[in-house]
Image (tube, rainbow, N blue to C red):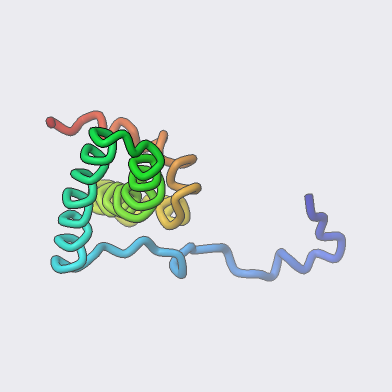
Length: 112
């Protein structure tokens, strides 16, 4: 915990989080990420069928979850909730995983 004994922090402007805004992708970036997700998910099934568990886990954890699924989820939450969302929670996978519970009702309302 930091203590501001001299009152320096009172003159600082309030945080707006605009620097860390989760931007929405353009159509090409969205299509590329979605296509990569569906392309790579097939390799998980293939790896499991072949008994290559380490490759399947790598594909699920490193590639699909951290690179594609988090991006798609953050974009969906940003598009659905709007600019009022605490955008610092949509930028990084660990922050998204911790902060996604507050948006879970948005995800549960999807008709799949």
